[in-house]
Structures are given as C-alpha cells and as structure tokens.
Image 1 (cartoon, rainbow, N blue to C red):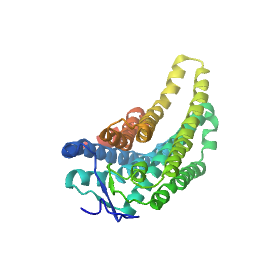
Image 2: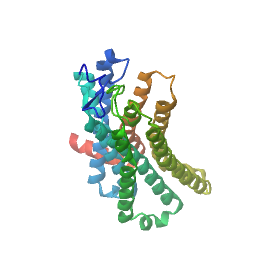
Image 3: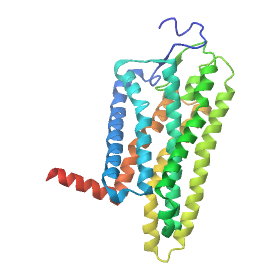
Image 4: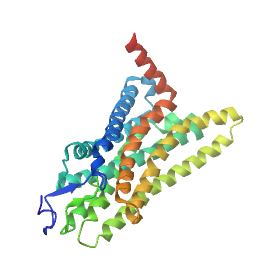
Length: 315
C-alpha cells in the first residue's frame, strides 16, 4: 500500500477509504450510533414489509408504495453500512476499483429511487383526496406496478453515467478517498484531469431528478391543500390533512439532508472535511431509520396490526 498512494496509474486496482477524515481516533465510538441506526433501519423496514404482506387490508397503493420505499431503504443502507462498519471496526479500508464504482452506482441509483417513490406517494395522496371516488380505478395494481417499474428504470438509467465517467478519468495522484463510501464527487475529485463533465452531470442529475421530483410534489400538495380548504368543516380539513403528515415528514427526512449534502460537497470549500462526510452519512442513514418510525407512528392500520402481532406473541 505504501507506493500505491503516490505512483502513477491510470486505473488503480484499489481505492483506500479513510472513513471520516480527522476523526479516525473516534471511529469506534462513531460506529456505535451508526450500527444502532443500521439495526433500527433493518428491523423497522422488515417489519413494515412483513405487516403489509400479512395484512390484506393494507394491500392498496399507499402501502405498496410504502413497501417499495422500505425495500429501497434496506438496499441503500446495506450498500454502504457493512463496508463502513468494517472500516470503523477492523480498519479494512481497501475497496477494489470495480467494487467502488459498483457501490457508487447503487448508492446514487437507490437514492434516486427513494425520491421517485415519494413522488408516487404524493400522486396517491392527490388522487385519494382530490378524486376519492376514482382512487381504486385510477391507481389499479397494474398502474402501481408500472409506476414502480418507471421509477426503477429512470433511476437506473440516469445513474449509469456516474461510473462510466468516473472510470474514464486518470487517477495519477492518489487512490485515497477522504470519505466513508464511494460517493461520486468524492471519487472523481481524485482524478488528475478536468472533471467538469462529471461535476456538471452530477448537478444536472441532482436538479433534474430530485429537483423535478420536488416540483411535482409541490404541485401535488398545492392541489391537495386547495381541495382540503374547500372541505366544509374544520374537523374534516384536519382529518384529511393528517393523512398526509407521514408523507410530508418522509419528504423532509430525505430532501433536506440530500440537497444540503450535495451542495456542500461541491461548494462548501471552507467547511471541514469531517463535517461534510458526516452530513453525507446522515443523508444515507437517517431516512431508512425515520421512514418506518414515521409511518409506524402516524399510520393507524400499521399500529393496529403491530399491536395485534405483539399481543398474539404475548398470549
């Protein structure tokens, strides 16, 4: 490893992930909340999937989309946390060039899928509130499956340029990535070449995928709020709006860390490296932890089914 960090190479056989630069001495302590969050994410999202599968009354579009979100949360956290914990616990920092590009692809692809699923859930809320009598005829199982397929294809196709662009650059200075996983911008910043194409495509992807998704969600909720304000009583308005609160919390949990992390990685030149890496990890870890908690607390059907399962186990 001694020479590989400085000698000339066009495609390094391995990269070295530093974990959280500047906080190496605290890696063991940092791993404790990270491991706890990963365990909560696994347990919470598998519980959501189990309850939706076992309860026939939950076999409807809202919970199908919630299941898609749970699967995506499991995939995005599993694509990064095991390697991250191996760095913290065993100082296992090496990752092959191909494995790094593969991780890069999956991290950004699953992130885009999460965003697309939240748009689909906003569509479900819009149809349920603005066209309640036509909800079952508009969002049929076939339509839900097609929406899910469209989200997967969009994310997979738009993320493909990331690893292909990263592979073409020469990495002749260092193979040390000052990060805990192979984030696109962290990898291409190591290249000794003009990487503006990669940087511009990353910004294009951020605003064309997540940015447009935020616009679609905003339009949906504008129409939803207009419909809510036309309801006759205050109780009806509050009751209808409460059906959207889980989704709104999930939106905030995803987009605030996402945009903050992406923009500070590119423009936060005066921000400390360890803070940037911590924010990037929060962006990956927090939504998978919060989504099952949000929907478990705010969704009555899931609460009832979970209590039934717990009561049956006790008896």
